[in-house]
Image 1 (cartoon, rainbow, N blue to C red):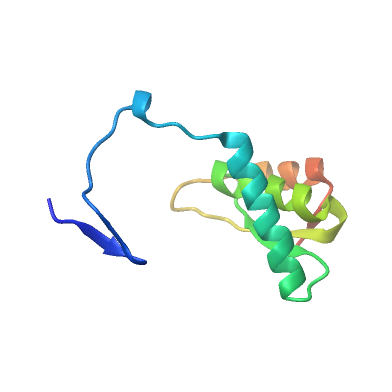
Image 2: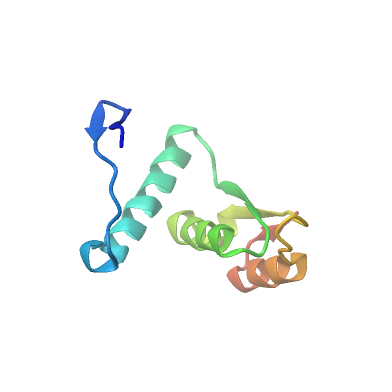
Length: 103
């Protein structure tokens, strides 16, 4: 295998087992919330807007954004992704549960 290079990092790629993978989920979530807050402030914005398609990845972004800047300061753009069959209805229901604006 070739070494992966980028951002000043040189690493040999290798497969790892789940027993070797250790992620502090609470710490990662807090770092992401902090990054959203800091970026919102740095861009002089009053809130955040994100796409929500009913999938788990956009749901996580939605939750983190609501926790970072407050549900009343976020907006969800409902996106239909027919390629992977995500549900617009599921996205709308999730946004309503988070009490964020829906477009």
